[in-house]
Amino acid sequence: MFKFNFSADDLEFDDPELAAQQQDEDQLEDLAKPLESLSVSPAEQILVPASQIDLQSKSCLHSLPSTLHFELAQIPVLTSGAGAGTAIATDTKTGKEKEVVTIYKRNLEDVKFQIAQEDEEFDAQENDTANGTTTTTVTGPGGVEMLALAGTSDLVKGVYEGGLKTWECALDLVAYLAEQKENFDGQRVLELGCGSALPGIYVLTQSDSVKVDLQDYNDQVLKLVTLLNVLLNTHVRPDQQPIDEEEEDEKEMEEIETDQADKADGEGEDEDEDEEDEDEEPEADPADGDFQGVELDLPDSEEERLQLLSKVANQSKFFMGDWSGLVELMAFKDDADKYDLILTSETIYAEESHPKLYATIKNSLKRGGKALVAAKTFYFGVGGDILSFRRLIEKDGVFNVKVVFSAQAFVRREILELTFKA
Image (cartoon, rainbow, N blue to C red; front, side):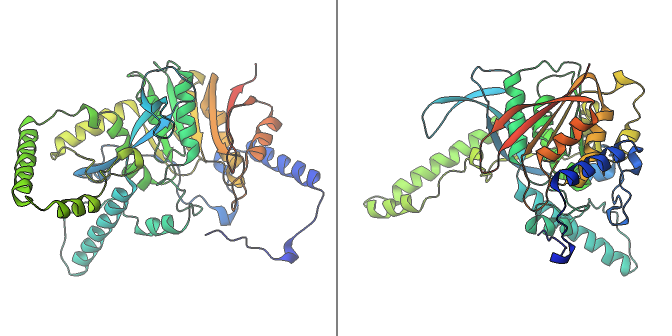
Protein backbone atom coordinates (compact mmCIF):
# COMPACT_ATOMS: atom_id res chain seq x y z
CA MET A 1 0.00 0.00 0.00
CA PHE A 2 1.37 3.41 -0.92
CA LYS A 3 1.26 6.43 1.36
CA PHE A 4 2.00 10.04 0.60
CA ASN A 5 4.07 11.09 3.61
CA PHE A 6 3.30 14.81 3.72
CA SER A 7 0.83 17.18 5.31
CA ALA A 8 -0.87 20.33 4.06
CA ASP A 9 1.94 22.41 5.58
CA ASP A 10 4.43 20.72 3.28
CA LEU A 11 2.69 21.81 0.08
CA GLU A 12 4.15 24.67 -1.95
CA PHE A 13 2.14 26.30 -4.72
CA ASP A 14 4.93 27.22 -7.15
CA ASP A 15 4.56 28.06 -10.80
CA PRO A 16 4.13 24.63 -12.49
CA GLU A 17 6.32 25.58 -15.47
CA LEU A 18 9.17 26.76 -13.24
CA ALA A 19 8.87 23.63 -11.11
CA ALA A 20 9.01 21.39 -14.21
CA GLN A 21 12.02 23.32 -15.55
CA GLN A 22 13.88 22.94 -12.26
CA GLN A 23 13.07 19.22 -12.18
CA ASP A 24 14.44 18.78 -15.71
CA GLU A 25 17.66 20.59 -14.78
CA ASP A 26 18.10 18.44 -11.68
CA GLN A 27 17.61 15.24 -13.68
CA LEU A 28 20.06 16.30 -16.40
CA GLU A 29 22.58 17.16 -13.70
CA ASP A 30 22.18 13.58 -12.44
CA LEU A 31 22.85 12.22 -15.94
CA ALA A 32 26.19 14.04 -16.04
CA LYS A 33 27.32 12.17 -12.89
CA PRO A 34 28.91 8.70 -12.95
CA LEU A 35 26.23 6.02 -13.01
CA GLU A 36 27.17 4.73 -9.56
CA SER A 37 26.57 8.20 -8.08
CA LEU A 38 22.97 8.59 -9.22
CA SER A 39 21.48 7.42 -5.92
CA VAL A 40 22.87 9.77 -3.28
CA SER A 41 20.09 10.17 -0.75
CA PRO A 42 20.57 8.06 2.42
CA ALA A 43 16.88 7.19 2.20
CA GLU A 44 17.47 5.80 -1.29
CA GLN A 45 20.60 3.72 -0.75
CA ILE A 46 21.09 0.93 -3.29
CA LEU A 47 19.97 -2.11 -1.35
CA VAL A 48 20.83 -4.59 -4.08
CA PRO A 49 23.90 -3.66 -6.15
CA ALA A 50 24.03 -4.77 -9.76
CA SER A 51 25.56 -8.21 -10.26
CA GLN A 52 25.44 -11.13 -12.69
CA ILE A 53 23.81 -14.39 -11.66
CA ASP A 54 25.78 -17.58 -12.18
CA LEU A 55 23.18 -19.76 -13.90
CA GLN A 56 25.06 -22.93 -12.97
CA SER A 57 25.34 -22.12 -9.29
CA LYS A 58 23.84 -24.36 -6.61
CA SER A 59 21.22 -21.67 -5.94
CA CYS A 60 19.98 -21.72 -9.55
CA LEU A 61 20.18 -25.49 -9.68
CA HIS A 62 18.08 -25.75 -6.52
CA SER A 63 15.54 -23.26 -7.88
CA LEU A 64 14.49 -25.75 -10.59
CA PRO A 65 11.39 -27.59 -9.30
CA SER A 66 10.71 -31.21 -10.17
CA THR A 67 7.41 -30.26 -11.82
CA LEU A 68 6.41 -27.00 -13.48
CA HIS A 69 2.80 -25.82 -13.64
CA PHE A 70 2.30 -23.43 -16.51
CA GLU A 71 -0.30 -21.51 -18.46
CA LEU A 72 -0.44 -19.86 -21.87
CA ALA A 73 -0.18 -16.18 -22.62
CA GLN A 74 -2.01 -15.79 -25.93
CA ILE A 75 -1.32 -12.32 -27.27
CA PRO A 76 -3.20 -10.97 -30.32
CA VAL A 77 -0.87 -9.51 -32.96
CA LEU A 78 -1.62 -5.93 -33.97
CA THR A 79 -2.08 -6.62 -37.70
CA SER A 80 -2.99 -9.64 -39.79
CA GLY A 81 -0.52 -11.85 -41.61
CA ALA A 82 1.08 -14.86 -39.96
CA GLY A 83 4.73 -14.63 -38.99
CA ALA A 84 7.29 -16.68 -37.09
CA GLY A 85 6.17 -17.65 -33.62
CA THR A 86 2.53 -16.87 -34.27
CA ALA A 87 -0.58 -18.93 -34.88
CA ILE A 88 -4.13 -18.40 -36.04
CA ALA A 89 -6.88 -18.69 -33.41
CA THR A 90 -10.63 -18.08 -33.46
CA ASP A 91 -12.02 -15.31 -31.30
CA THR A 92 -14.71 -16.92 -29.13
CA LYS A 93 -16.69 -13.67 -28.99
CA THR A 94 -16.71 -12.63 -32.63
CA GLY A 95 -15.98 -15.95 -34.35
CA LYS A 96 -13.31 -14.25 -36.44
CA GLU A 97 -9.82 -15.60 -36.91
CA LYS A 98 -6.99 -13.68 -35.31
CA GLU A 99 -3.23 -14.03 -35.26
CA VAL A 100 -1.80 -14.66 -31.79
CA VAL A 101 1.59 -15.14 -30.21
CA THR A 102 1.60 -18.01 -27.71
CA ILE A 103 4.14 -17.90 -24.89
CA TYR A 104 4.32 -20.36 -22.02
CA LYS A 105 4.63 -18.86 -18.56
CA ARG A 106 4.95 -20.36 -15.12
CA ASN A 107 1.78 -20.10 -13.08
CA LEU A 108 1.92 -17.60 -10.22
CA GLU A 109 0.40 -20.04 -7.73
CA ASP A 110 3.19 -22.50 -8.56
CA VAL A 111 5.76 -19.80 -7.76
CA LYS A 112 4.07 -18.98 -4.46
CA PHE A 113 4.00 -22.65 -3.48
CA GLN A 114 7.73 -23.03 -4.16
CA ILE A 115 8.61 -19.88 -2.22
CA ALA A 116 6.65 -21.12 0.80
CA GLN A 117 8.20 -24.60 0.50
CA GLU A 118 11.75 -23.23 0.37
CA ASP A 119 11.10 -21.02 3.37
CA GLU A 120 10.13 -24.13 5.37
CA GLU A 121 13.40 -25.77 4.30
CA PHE A 122 15.30 -22.68 5.46
CA ASP A 123 13.54 -22.79 8.84
CA ALA A 124 14.36 -26.51 9.16
CA GLN A 125 18.03 -25.82 8.45
CA GLU A 126 18.13 -23.06 11.08
CA ASN A 127 16.55 -25.37 13.66
CA ASP A 128 19.11 -28.10 12.90
CA THR A 129 21.92 -25.61 13.36
CA ALA A 130 20.43 -24.43 16.66
CA ASN A 131 20.32 -28.04 17.88
CA GLY A 132 23.99 -28.53 17.11
CA THR A 133 23.47 -30.57 13.97
CA THR A 134 24.23 -29.77 10.35
CA THR A 135 22.38 -30.36 7.11
CA THR A 136 23.45 -30.57 3.48
CA THR A 137 20.23 -29.02 2.22
CA VAL A 138 20.90 -26.16 -0.21
CA THR A 139 18.23 -23.58 0.42
CA GLY A 140 16.83 -21.49 -2.37
CA PRO A 141 16.38 -17.73 -2.35
CA GLY A 142 13.51 -17.91 0.16
CA GLY A 143 11.27 -14.87 0.09
CA VAL A 144 8.06 -15.33 2.08
CA GLU A 145 8.46 -11.70 3.14
CA MET A 146 8.56 -10.72 -0.53
CA LEU A 147 5.55 -12.93 -1.20
CA ALA A 148 3.59 -11.22 1.58
CA LEU A 149 4.48 -7.85 0.11
CA ALA A 150 3.40 -9.00 -3.34
CA GLY A 151 -0.01 -9.86 -1.92
CA THR A 152 -0.58 -6.41 -0.44
CA SER A 153 1.14 -4.11 -2.91
CA ASP A 154 2.29 -4.09 -6.53
CA LEU A 155 5.72 -2.87 -5.44
CA VAL A 156 7.76 -1.90 -2.41
CA LYS A 157 10.69 0.32 -3.31
CA GLY A 158 14.01 -1.43 -2.90
CA VAL A 159 12.42 -4.70 -1.80
CA TYR A 160 9.85 -5.94 -4.31
CA GLU A 161 9.47 -4.39 -7.76
CA GLY A 162 6.40 -6.22 -9.05
CA GLY A 163 8.21 -8.93 -11.03
CA LEU A 164 5.94 -11.83 -10.06
CA LYS A 165 3.08 -10.55 -12.20
CA THR A 166 2.78 -9.99 -15.95
CA TRP A 167 1.56 -6.50 -16.79
CA GLU A 168 -0.37 -5.20 -19.80
CA CYS A 169 2.46 -3.23 -21.39
CA ALA A 170 4.62 -6.35 -21.62
CA LEU A 171 1.89 -7.91 -23.76
CA ASP A 172 1.72 -4.73 -25.87
CA LEU A 173 5.45 -4.99 -26.47
CA VAL A 174 5.22 -8.63 -27.57
CA ALA A 175 2.36 -7.80 -29.94
CA TYR A 176 4.30 -4.88 -31.41
CA LEU A 177 7.46 -6.96 -31.91
CA ALA A 178 5.45 -9.72 -33.59
CA GLU A 179 3.79 -7.23 -35.91
CA GLN A 180 7.16 -5.74 -36.95
CA LYS A 181 8.56 -9.19 -37.89
CA GLU A 182 12.17 -8.10 -37.60
CA ASN A 183 15.13 -10.39 -38.21
CA PHE A 184 16.97 -10.82 -34.90
CA ASP A 185 19.74 -13.07 -36.22
CA GLY A 186 23.07 -12.21 -34.60
CA GLN A 187 21.63 -9.34 -32.55
CA ARG A 188 22.25 -8.55 -28.89
CA VAL A 189 19.10 -7.70 -26.94
CA LEU A 190 18.59 -6.55 -23.36
CA GLU A 191 15.33 -6.48 -21.40
CA LEU A 192 15.44 -4.18 -18.35
CA GLY A 193 13.10 -4.86 -15.42
CA CYS A 194 12.12 -8.07 -17.16
CA GLY A 195 9.99 -9.89 -14.52
CA SER A 196 8.23 -12.68 -16.41
CA ALA A 197 10.26 -11.53 -19.48
CA LEU A 198 7.67 -12.20 -22.19
CA PRO A 199 9.10 -9.62 -24.66
CA GLY A 200 12.65 -10.91 -24.23
CA ILE A 201 11.47 -14.51 -24.49
CA TYR A 202 9.56 -13.74 -27.69
CA VAL A 203 12.78 -12.40 -29.26
CA LEU A 204 14.69 -15.41 -27.93
CA THR A 205 12.34 -17.79 -29.76
CA GLN A 206 12.76 -16.01 -33.10
CA SER A 207 16.40 -16.88 -33.76
CA ASP A 208 19.00 -19.42 -32.71
CA SER A 209 21.77 -16.83 -33.02
CA VAL A 210 20.21 -13.95 -31.04
CA LYS A 211 21.58 -13.19 -27.56
CA VAL A 212 18.98 -11.95 -25.07
CA ASP A 213 20.15 -10.73 -21.67
CA LEU A 214 17.61 -10.27 -18.87
CA GLN A 215 17.70 -7.93 -15.87
CA ASP A 216 15.46 -7.58 -12.85
CA TYR A 217 15.88 -6.11 -9.37
CA ASN A 218 14.98 -9.31 -7.51
CA ASP A 219 17.04 -12.49 -7.73
CA GLN A 220 13.97 -14.50 -6.58
CA VAL A 221 12.05 -13.26 -9.61
CA LEU A 222 14.91 -14.11 -11.96
CA LYS A 223 15.38 -17.62 -10.57
CA LEU A 224 11.77 -18.63 -9.94
CA VAL A 225 9.99 -16.82 -12.78
CA THR A 226 12.30 -15.53 -15.52
CA LEU A 227 14.57 -18.58 -15.73
CA LEU A 228 11.68 -21.06 -15.71
CA ASN A 229 9.79 -19.06 -18.36
CA VAL A 230 12.88 -19.11 -20.57
CA LEU A 231 13.16 -22.89 -20.18
CA LEU A 232 9.45 -23.39 -20.91
CA ASN A 233 9.78 -21.57 -24.22
CA THR A 234 13.14 -22.92 -25.36
CA HIS A 235 14.78 -26.11 -24.15
CA VAL A 236 11.82 -27.83 -22.45
CA ARG A 237 8.90 -26.54 -24.51
CA PRO A 238 5.73 -28.52 -23.60
CA ASP A 239 4.70 -28.82 -27.26
CA GLN A 240 8.05 -30.39 -28.19
CA GLN A 241 8.20 -33.06 -25.50
CA PRO A 242 8.19 -36.70 -26.68
CA ILE A 243 4.93 -38.55 -26.08
CA ASP A 244 5.15 -41.53 -23.76
CA GLU A 245 3.09 -44.01 -25.80
CA GLU A 246 2.92 -46.55 -22.97
CA GLU A 247 1.59 -43.91 -20.60
CA GLU A 248 -0.91 -42.73 -23.21
CA ASP A 249 -2.14 -46.32 -23.75
CA GLU A 250 -2.57 -46.82 -20.00
CA LYS A 251 -4.51 -43.59 -19.71
CA GLU A 252 -6.75 -44.55 -22.64
CA MET A 253 -7.45 -47.98 -21.11
CA GLU A 254 -8.33 -46.37 -17.79
CA GLU A 255 -10.82 -44.07 -19.54
CA ILE A 256 -12.43 -47.02 -21.36
CA GLU A 257 -12.72 -49.01 -18.13
CA THR A 258 -14.19 -46.02 -16.32
CA ASP A 259 -16.77 -45.47 -19.08
CA GLN A 260 -17.78 -49.15 -19.00
CA ALA A 261 -18.11 -49.09 -15.22
CA ASP A 262 -20.24 -45.95 -15.38
CA LYS A 263 -22.55 -47.51 -17.96
CA ALA A 264 -22.93 -50.69 -15.88
CA ASP A 265 -23.75 -48.73 -12.73
CA GLY A 266 -25.93 -46.15 -14.43
CA GLU A 267 -28.60 -48.25 -16.15
CA GLY A 268 -31.99 -46.73 -15.41
CA GLU A 269 -30.45 -43.82 -13.51
CA ASP A 270 -30.74 -41.04 -16.09
CA GLU A 271 -31.69 -38.48 -13.45
CA ASP A 272 -28.50 -39.16 -11.49
CA GLU A 273 -26.45 -38.77 -14.68
CA ASP A 274 -28.09 -35.41 -15.38
CA GLU A 275 -27.22 -34.25 -11.87
CA GLU A 276 -23.62 -35.39 -12.32
CA ASP A 277 -23.40 -33.50 -15.62
CA GLU A 278 -24.62 -30.33 -13.90
CA ASP A 279 -22.00 -30.69 -11.16
CA GLU A 280 -19.18 -31.48 -13.56
CA GLU A 281 -16.53 -28.75 -13.63
CA PRO A 282 -15.48 -27.31 -17.00
CA GLU A 283 -12.18 -28.55 -18.37
CA ALA A 284 -9.21 -26.38 -17.47
CA ASP A 285 -8.16 -24.07 -20.28
CA PRO A 286 -4.59 -22.71 -20.10
CA ALA A 287 -5.57 -19.80 -22.32
CA ASP A 288 -7.94 -18.64 -19.58
CA GLY A 289 -5.24 -18.81 -16.94
CA ASP A 290 -6.22 -22.28 -15.66
CA PHE A 291 -3.30 -24.55 -14.99
CA GLN A 292 -4.69 -27.62 -13.26
CA GLY A 293 -3.31 -30.63 -15.09
CA VAL A 294 -1.08 -28.42 -17.25
CA GLU A 295 2.32 -29.42 -15.98
CA LEU A 296 5.75 -30.46 -17.14
CA ASP A 297 8.31 -32.64 -15.38
CA LEU A 298 11.92 -31.43 -15.39
CA PRO A 299 14.87 -33.85 -15.44
CA ASP A 300 15.70 -35.41 -12.07
CA SER A 301 19.46 -35.80 -12.41
CA GLU A 302 21.79 -32.97 -11.52
CA GLU A 303 23.78 -33.56 -14.70
CA GLU A 304 20.75 -33.08 -16.96
CA ARG A 305 19.68 -29.98 -15.04
CA LEU A 306 23.15 -28.45 -15.37
CA GLN A 307 23.00 -29.15 -19.10
CA LEU A 308 19.72 -27.21 -19.32
CA LEU A 309 21.18 -24.28 -17.40
CA SER A 310 24.25 -24.36 -19.62
CA LYS A 311 22.06 -24.09 -22.73
CA VAL A 312 20.33 -21.03 -21.25
CA ALA A 313 23.68 -19.46 -20.34
CA ASN A 314 24.90 -19.88 -23.93
CA GLN A 315 22.20 -17.50 -25.17
CA SER A 316 21.39 -15.31 -22.15
CA LYS A 317 22.97 -13.54 -19.20
CA PHE A 318 20.95 -12.76 -16.09
CA PHE A 319 21.59 -9.54 -14.16
CA MET A 320 20.07 -8.62 -10.80
CA GLY A 321 19.98 -5.47 -8.70
CA ASP A 322 19.69 -1.75 -9.15
CA TRP A 323 20.27 -0.07 -12.51
CA SER A 324 23.04 2.08 -11.05
CA GLY A 325 26.28 0.28 -11.73
CA LEU A 326 24.77 -2.04 -14.36
CA VAL A 327 26.64 -0.44 -17.26
CA GLU A 328 29.90 -0.55 -15.32
CA LEU A 329 29.26 -4.24 -14.56
CA MET A 330 28.70 -5.02 -18.26
CA ALA A 331 32.06 -3.40 -19.08
CA PHE A 332 31.46 -2.72 -22.78
CA LYS A 333 34.74 -2.70 -24.75
CA ASP A 334 33.41 -0.43 -27.51
CA ASP A 335 30.18 0.61 -29.21
CA ALA A 336 29.99 -2.64 -31.20
CA ASP A 337 29.88 -4.54 -27.89
CA LYS A 338 26.64 -2.81 -26.86
CA TYR A 339 23.03 -3.85 -27.52
CA ASP A 340 21.18 -3.63 -30.82
CA LEU A 341 17.81 -3.54 -29.06
CA ILE A 342 16.79 -2.64 -25.52
CA LEU A 343 13.31 -3.53 -24.27
CA THR A 344 11.57 -2.42 -21.11
CA SER A 345 7.96 -2.35 -19.97
CA GLU A 346 6.19 -0.92 -16.92
CA THR A 347 9.47 0.44 -15.51
CA ILE A 348 8.79 4.19 -15.39
CA TYR A 349 6.23 4.02 -12.55
CA ALA A 350 8.55 5.89 -10.13
CA GLU A 351 9.75 9.24 -11.43
CA GLU A 352 12.84 9.25 -9.21
CA SER A 353 14.12 6.20 -11.10
CA HIS A 354 13.81 7.83 -14.55
CA PRO A 355 17.40 9.18 -14.64
CA LYS A 356 18.89 5.76 -13.79
CA LEU A 357 16.76 3.95 -16.36
CA TYR A 358 17.48 6.51 -19.06
CA ALA A 359 21.22 6.58 -18.30
CA THR A 360 21.33 2.78 -18.52
CA ILE A 361 19.60 2.81 -21.91
CA LYS A 362 21.77 5.65 -23.17
CA ASN A 363 25.04 3.96 -22.19
CA SER A 364 24.08 0.40 -23.22
CA LEU A 365 22.60 0.98 -26.68
CA LYS A 366 24.86 0.93 -29.72
CA ARG A 367 24.71 3.55 -32.45
CA GLY A 368 22.12 2.45 -34.99
CA GLY A 369 20.23 0.47 -32.36
CA LYS A 370 16.91 1.32 -30.76
CA ALA A 371 15.13 1.10 -27.43
CA LEU A 372 11.43 0.37 -26.93
CA VAL A 373 9.82 1.63 -23.73
CA ALA A 374 6.29 0.34 -23.09
CA ALA A 375 4.36 2.09 -20.33
CA LYS A 376 1.10 3.55 -19.14
CA THR A 377 0.78 7.27 -19.57
CA PHE A 378 0.40 7.67 -15.80
CA TYR A 379 0.85 5.48 -12.72
CA PHE A 380 -1.55 6.33 -9.92
CA GLY A 381 -0.10 6.27 -6.43
CA VAL A 382 3.56 6.40 -7.46
CA GLY A 383 3.64 9.42 -9.74
CA GLY A 384 5.58 8.15 -12.75
CA ASP A 385 4.31 9.09 -16.22
CA ILE A 386 5.39 8.99 -19.86
CA LEU A 387 5.38 12.78 -20.22
CA SER A 388 8.03 13.23 -17.51
CA PHE A 389 10.19 10.46 -18.96
CA ARG A 390 9.86 11.82 -22.48
CA ARG A 391 10.67 15.36 -21.28
CA LEU A 392 13.88 14.01 -19.72
CA ILE A 393 14.90 12.34 -23.00
CA GLU A 394 14.13 15.36 -25.15
CA LYS A 395 15.94 17.73 -22.77
CA ASP A 396 19.10 15.63 -23.07
CA GLY A 397 18.93 15.95 -26.86
CA VAL A 398 20.67 12.64 -27.65
CA PHE A 399 17.71 10.61 -28.92
CA ASN A 400 14.89 10.95 -31.37
CA VAL A 401 11.76 9.77 -29.58
CA LYS A 402 8.39 8.89 -31.06
CA VAL A 403 5.26 6.98 -30.13
CA VAL A 404 5.04 3.80 -32.23
CA PHE A 405 2.06 2.23 -30.45
CA SER A 406 -0.91 3.53 -28.49
CA ALA A 407 -3.78 1.65 -26.85
CA GLN A 408 -6.86 3.42 -25.59
CA ALA A 409 -7.92 2.20 -22.14
CA PHE A 410 -8.89 3.67 -18.77
CA VAL A 411 -5.22 4.65 -18.63
CA ARG A 412 -3.73 4.92 -22.12
CA ARG A 413 -0.74 2.72 -22.90
CA GLU A 414 2.07 3.63 -25.28
CA ILE A 415 5.36 2.34 -26.67
CA LEU A 416 8.13 4.90 -27.17
CA GLU A 417 10.92 4.25 -29.66
CA LEU A 418 14.32 5.80 -28.93
CA THR A 419 16.95 6.09 -31.66
CA PHE A 420 20.19 8.11 -31.63
CA LYS A 421 20.17 11.41 -33.49
CA ALA A 422 22.50 11.60 -36.47
